Image 1 (tube, rainbow, N blue to C red):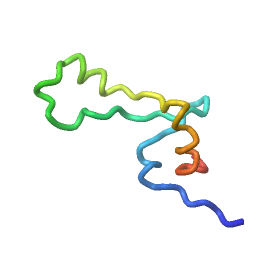
Image 2 (tube, helix red, strand yellow; image 1 turned 135 degrees about the horizontal axis):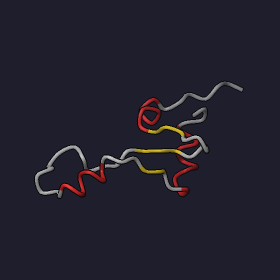
Image 3 (cartoon, rainbow, N blue to C red; image 1 turned 135 degrees about the vertical axis):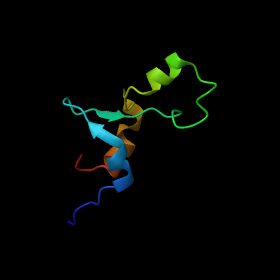
Length: 65
């Protein structure tokens, strides 16, 4: 059985936590920042965990992560 290739785009966007969950960065923080509040922009800087409903999709993209 051949090895599965890792999706390199996904590998750059997701990191595993110590418990094996996947961490991701939040969207909507790159442009049109003037209308967003300071509090909202500050919270967008924090990372979030990938939801359990998307775990199977990411497992296909990141078989060895």
